[in-house]
Amino acid sequence: MKKKPLILVTNDDGVTAPGIRALIAVMKQLGDVVVVAPDSPQSATGHAITINNTLYINKIDIDPDIETEYSCSGTPVDCVKFAVNEILHRKPVLCVSGVNHGSNSSINVIYSGTMSAAVEAGIEGIPAIGFSLLDYNWDADFEPAKPFIKKITEEVLANGLPDGVILNVNIPKLPQKEIKGIKVCRQAKAMWQEKFDKRTNPMGRDYYWLTGKFVNMDKGEDTDEWALANGYVSVVPVQFDLTAHHAIQGLNGWGMNEE
Image 1 (cartoon, rainbow, N blue to C red):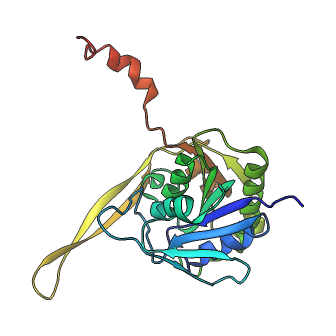
Image 2 (tube, rainbow, N blue to C red):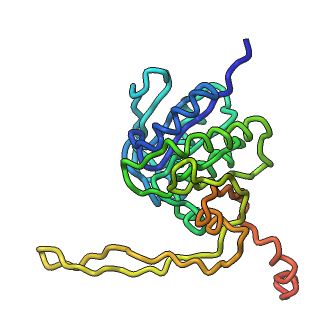
């Protein structure tokens, strides 16, 4: 009998979040599932790892169909590191992260714990996908997203991914019949215009809430923001090699290399 592919599932919203439970439901159709996810929400932690505190891992039993499911006290990246080095006895063929409650399109990929977990898997040589739904509600409806999650995952399992490439998948908040399809895109040039909301606590000490407005400066029709605004699932290939290759030749002309 052909062995089922081993799929590692993680997220940043916590192991009990509806998004990861929806992702697990899809992955169970495609392979043997191992879950290692944070024991509490870890949104916007980026690629943080725990080095100045202890880590705890607990075996849990949420889904009776899954033998290997753990909660971890650390970050999403910690979860992937722990899964690869301490829990798994064979390398997974795929790591999926999510489904995130909220967008990770455009510049949000930098801050995302969901995508950082997927990127960490990519660093470990594991093909990886981060999935996000453009709905921040805890009780978001993930059913319309499931067919697209399954389709994209099946394609990655069948075709693999180029070395060092991870997929950032965002799904619009729409009924399934209104989602037009899937588009492979580039990351839109956008940013957050931040504002700090200053308040004072009952003891008289000032404190701040970070707020902001998302601004898309990119008018291209080949971006993730355009795809999502027009009813498509966006798929952006990202990489962990942050080298600005196009700048190397120019910098070499500055004379810094002179001895």
